[in-house]
Length: 191
Ligand code: AP5
Ligand code: MG
Image (cartoon, rainbow, N blue to C red; front, side, top):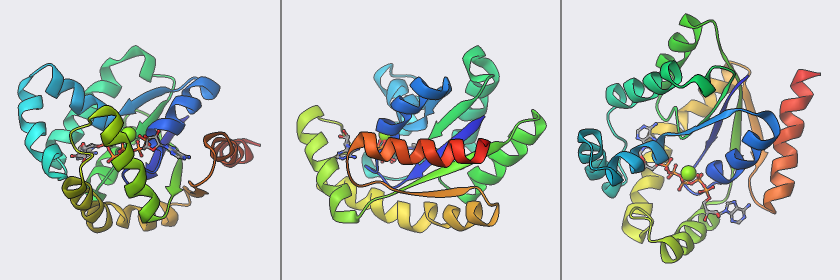
C-alpha cells in the first residue's frame, strides 16, 4: 500500500505520518526532511535546496522527482509500501509519480487530504518556529509557502479527486482523533 499525505504547510502531514508508520508499517518519506538533511550535511543538493526552502519556493520538479525515485528504488524498507509526505506538490510531480509507480507495478492507493483553516496553519508554524528555530517558519516565508501551496499544489486535489483517490480529512482537533479518521478512511477502503 502506498499513501500520499497531502495538505498545506503546517497541516499535520509529518505528525500523522508518524502514527501511520506505526499502525501500517509503511516507510515514511518526507521530501522536506530529505532536503533539510541534505542542507545539514552540506551536500550539493543541499546547497541548491537551501535557497528555495528559505524563500518558501518549491525546488525544481526534475530534481525533486529524481531524488524521490532514487529513494524508492534504493531503500529496501520502501519496497512494502510508502507514505509520501510533501510529494507530489505539482501536477508534473503527480504525473511523474503515476508513471514511476506503474513502471514498478505499484500504485498510490489513497491520498489523505488534511484540511485546516489558514489562521490555524499560521499559528502552528509560528509556534514551531519559536520552539525549534526551523528556518522557514518565519512570517515572511510562511506567507510565501502558503501562496505557493495555493498556486501550485491545490490543483492536485482535483487531480486526485478525478482519480477517485482523494480522502478529505478535517485536520483540526486532537492528533489522535484526526488519526482515527484517517485510519477509518484507509480501512474502509480495504474492507
Ligand atoms: P515540508 O517540510 O514538506 O514543509 P511543509 O509542507 O511546509 O509542511 P510542514 O512540514 O511545515 O507541516 P506538516 O504538514 O508536516 O505539519 P506538521 O506535522 O509538521 O517542505 C519544506 C520545503 O521543502 C518546501 O517549502 C519546499 O521548499 C521544499 N520541498 C519539499 N517537498 C517538495 C516537493 N515535493 N517539491 C518541491 N519542493 C519541495 O505540523 C505542523 C505543526 O503543527 C507542528 O508543530 C505540530 O506539532 C503541530 N500540529 C500537528 N498536528 C496538530 C494538531 N492536530 N493540533 C495542533 N497542532 C498540531
Ligand atoms: Mg512536515
